[in-house]
Amino acid sequence: MVVCLTGFMGCGKSSIGRELGILLDWDFVDLDEAIVDKAGMPISQIFADQGEEGFRRSEVAQLRFLLENSTNPIYHDRDNMVIALGGGTIMQPEAQALVDEHALCIYLKASFDTLFHNLAGQADHRPMLSSPNGLKARIEELMAEREDTYESTADIVIDTDGLSPREAAEVIAEALEGYEKATGIPIRY
Ligand code: S3P
Image (cartoon, rainbow, N blue to C red; front, top):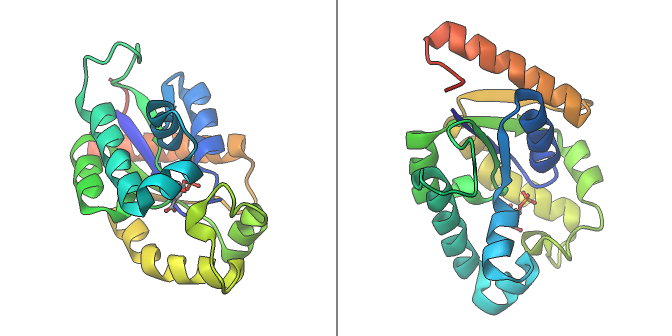
């Protein structure tokens, strides 16, 4: 099974995904890191050189590579893999279709206060956060645009407020077991 973690910037997709990979003994891939490795430059530079549109193209291409290229030798156990998506990945219909076809999607839901706390001072690394109106207004604006999509594309929603990455990973592992029991779809291949 490939599990994709989605949710707003700062909700903990990468740290929780890493813990989940350790807990399940599955490969973990951070989509942002994969894009940066492939491009050989940081995300802020990709945005500066190619704009958001260029970044989104690389994002879908990299996701497609991970989800469709099952002979990729980099990942030894790729049938069972956790992928931390970027906060905007699932907003692209092409990415949504890929995730829908190849993976189970988990929305890591965090409150505004948690996101604001985690994202303070992060606008340099996260170009989507820069705004003349300030961080609070920008988070509210993007959340309003994205929340329904996060909810509607997710197979499972996990409330991560107040949980450490390890605790959140444990909650997800339990939810995966519940999903397997309820649907009969095997989680581990
Ligand atoms: C983005 C989120 C970032 C990264 C890029 C765009 C977004 O990932 O993909 O800066 O549009 O929400 P994280 O959610 O891991 O910060």
